[in-house]
Image 1: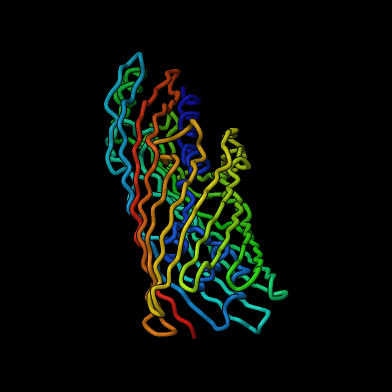
Image 2: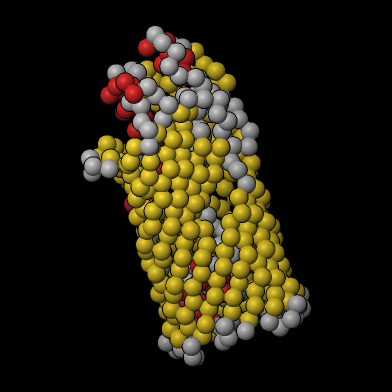
Length: 429
């Protein structure tokens, strides 16, 4: 019986990693406010401010003076879950929930410094992966919901070189600090466990898993731009995979005889996928420009989820079947005058889960609708503001878990939308 509990416990723990690996929503686009205003269309080809460091370092050659940009995006999601949880043997209970994902502020800060007409260096910090789902302690589907809170802070240092009037190249290194907290509670399965064991060992709020950990991972990025002339530019950027191994502690409320743990050491491996982005920028008139992007994220290369005890023994090894995701964006920019610039954009963002999904990290296809503006208070000081509404496709899916020889399942419908509010301050020295 103890082995059965341990297997269930490990499976519950790895729900975190599985959710991360199948969630395009887990990958954050919100790296700049100016980009947010055009749904990030043209992000690898447009040189609005020092935020170019986040996507395509080659764009740093477009700047003649040192610049900084700092601010962030307030992410206000609304995810509602409808459904039921249980089993054919023990019956079903309600598993509906409103506002499962918490609001978060996603900060950013960038700088760049032209050394001469050919070389520029720059760096920055932004949150490129993150999510926070939080279900009540007594939520019936606690083994599938619970709390999932992860933040991955990316620190970047890059350099760029202008070969000639047409070609520029950039290369950078990334240091990613990731911190995770995961908890899963018994919920309605407590009565199934208690009935099978003949003793009231668990309540709805009993922890099956409580995991905390952090780690550093490292990667690299590269980019190039081609300028046909001052009004037409294309950019291509690549960001490498980053391997994260969360070393932390694992605990639960189970009795010692049934796999109880009290701050046991362990680790979970997770790979943040590599991605490509191609963008174009075309200035049609003196005031008006159009731009577009295609982004390919290689989730298909993240196929194995593994967990280890601190002794080095592997306790979990699961093969997943996730698909690559594509993101298409189209936007426009209009300079009203020397002080005011307006932006708009639309984008389609694919989910990676396919037919799979999870209430811990709901994943679905999304549509973006964005508006933004930049106001120049002086020739050197400007402020970006932006708003975007992101609407997710309604998903219907089933999640299952096996516990004590019984399969419990949740039949869910999720509806999601997100409102994004951005503000950045830019200064040129």
